[in-house]
Image 1 (spheres, helix red, strand yellow):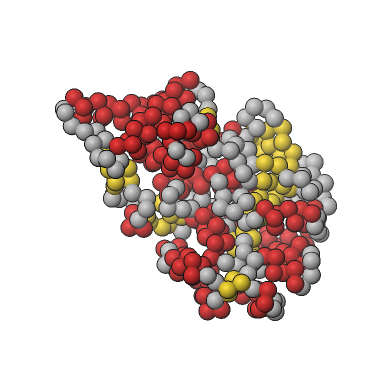
Image 2: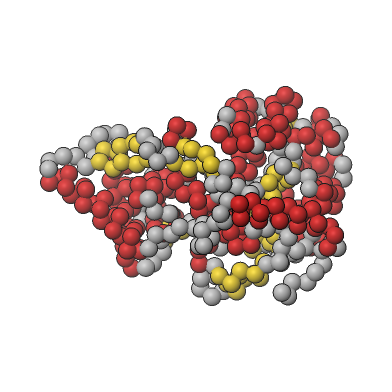
Amino acid sequence: MAFAPVGPEASFFEVLDQHRASLLAALRRGGGEPADGGTRLASSSEVLASIESVIQDVITSLARNKAPVFTIDNRSSWENIKFEDSVGLQMVPHCTRRKIKSDSPKSVKNFALILKILSIIYKLVQSNTHATKRDIYYTDSQLFGNQTVVDNIINDISCMLKVPRMSLHISSTSKGLIAGNLRYIEEDGTKVHCTCGTTAVAVPSNIQGIRNIITDAKFLLIVEKDATFQRLLDDNFCNRMSPCIMVTGKGVPDLNTRLLVKKLWDTFHIPVFTLVDADPHGIEIMCIYKYGSMAMSFEAHNLTVPAIRWLGLLPSDIKRLNIPRDTLIPLTKRDQMKLDSVLKRPYVTCQPFWRKEMEIMADSKMKAEIQALTFLSSDYLSRVYLPNKLKFGGWI
């Protein structure tokens, strides 16, 4: 390993190493993970067969003078979602479904758009080529109207075909960034050498294609916001805590950032921590990395990392560090609704320490951004708060 050891002494990582040992022990007790690292892809022939089956059903309906219908699992109701601590949020086996009818004024356009994108996917898979979601949108931007329509239909098709989205030969442009002690080779042979300096590398757009991943990192830190991520790099945090890896999804993470975090966990099983604002939005972002989302619950096995721990900013830290009230922000009505929603989610019952932190926030009716720590000193986050949390196990 050619990474230069410039971080703290080995004794600094004792608690982190103990945490990793406990994570590995829990994995062994649970029977480990699939040999493919948890990612279950479908072959090109399987994808083509699935699309052909859907089209055959359409043709059969037309031959019988019946209006064709697409049936898709309903991912907008918690009744259709089950929670497993080892996986996260996933669809129940026999969930309710919604019908997209070709003879209904409300859904006929959606039916047609699904057919159009199915034909695009079929050609991509058949020719072994790839396209971005943006490429698909621009094949007929007037027809689709906006990018969100395309994004939602692609998710619906993935769910309908029971095929992981990456097997559809559709990629999305990555918005995430990565820095630290990490090297890998991209699918096209490009060698990527992430560093602990002030410049980060864009998360690859084809996570499944990266290979020869090398790291000696002791931990992976997921940072909610780009501004905080950049500040940590500017403060030389990555170098001083080396060997480590830092990732940001710049807010709500895109699919590629989630896939990268999942791949790093599956490959190396190093501790993964989140640094988010002490507000309902930050907590929800952390939950997406850890347990997934309703929208992508059909693909939980490929995306979630239940081993993630909450490093900061904890609502209890605000009181413990005597952060002045005038640096805090009152919870809005929308914040309170979001907090109530998260508190009712099934995974909170197995996270009593998380619940306690959220109840502290609810009782105080205040939230705090990570930047509130600058009241103590401009570099308190990088020089005191995070190093102490990592050294003494200040995560939940």
